Amino acid sequence: MFESLTFMALVVLAFAIIITGIKSVPQGYGWTVERWGKYLRTLNPGLHFIVPIMDRVGHKQNLMEQVLDIPPQEVISSDNAQVQTDAVCFYQILEPVKAAYEVNDLVRAMQNLVMTNIRAVLGAMELDEMLSNRDRINTELLEKVDDATDPWGVKVTRVEIRDISPPTDLVDAMARQMKAEREKRAQILEAEGEREAAIKVAEGNKESDILRAEGELEAARREAEARERLAEAEASATAAVSNAIASGDPRAINYFIAQKYVDALGKLAESNNNKVMMIPLEASSVIGSIAGIADIAKDVAANGSPANQA
Image 1 (cartoon, one colour):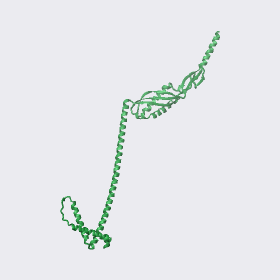
Image 2: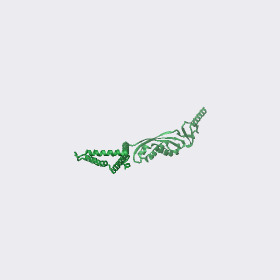
Image 3: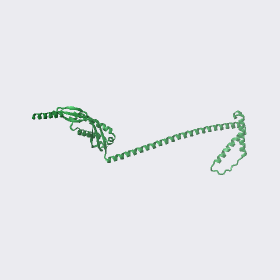
Image 4: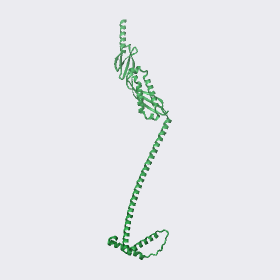
């Protein structure tokens, strides 16, 4: 009886020991196996058996992409502006062995590594550059952190800066500066508009002056032509009268006398000093001279020209 109970106890104990050697690894995980405290192998997702007592599971590593929150911290920029930043890091364990045995406390190590690189990258920038280059900051952080975590068997997929918060007084100063810049640009645009308008007005005045000068030039040219034709007509008339005088016609002499007489009367009439003029006028002599002029004109028209009469 005692022997049978002992046998049954041994069987149960053996069965329990065997059961402890069966391991089921869930999907997305990798378990390390240690024999007498030394790494032996890695168990992939599925059902596995390890040697009881001699082997044990060392570390259970999550192989899925994980999110690591980075605590907020204060950073001083290169222009001595103090801002508060926080970030988030996405990573994935590719080699469970390195993640388990190359670093102690992987999560804490990555947090400190990302925070240190944030201070290094942002501290080399000015505040304006820091606020306007989020993509470049994320890219630089990703390159630095991914290179640093490569010996740990970790692949960093993304590092994102969630917020960069300057102090309130600095935000107010930036708002005033932005307002001043916009007012400055508005004044510059207004001045450029006035300058363009003045240039257009000046060009219009220039074209108007050119057209006016061309018109005056054309008028002067026509007036000169008119004076030239009038001079030619007077020359022809003088030639005709001279021929008449040469031929002994007394009417030509009367023409010159009447012309001088009429010119003198016109000058006296244009004078501003004489309000009343009393001039002896021999109307019959003037009329006779005009009649003589008419006769000379008729003779010239009948015979062609004074030169032909000569």
